[in-house]
Length: 84
Image 1 (spheres, rainbow, N blue to C red):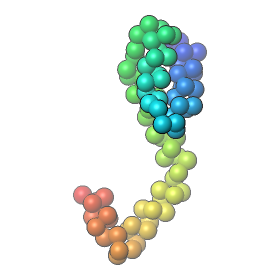
Image 2: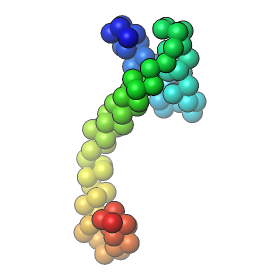
Image 3: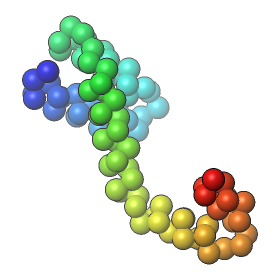
Image 4: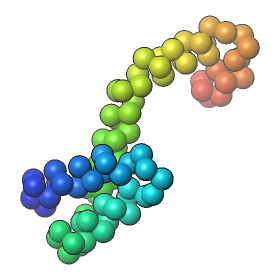
């Protein structure tokens, strides 16, 4: 896979991730037309990259939710589920 193809597939992933249509489907179709086949491992790394970007973007909110869960007795069940 060439770097230009990887950049194009990354852009497709980024643009189609948050619309209610499968971004993975878009990636498979684009990859089929670009290189004639599918490198499934690359598509998995693109999805992992999306997940990491979301964790980084929402890190303060995620941290605040976790702090609230561990400090508040009302969320004891959620805390215990997370810890197990």
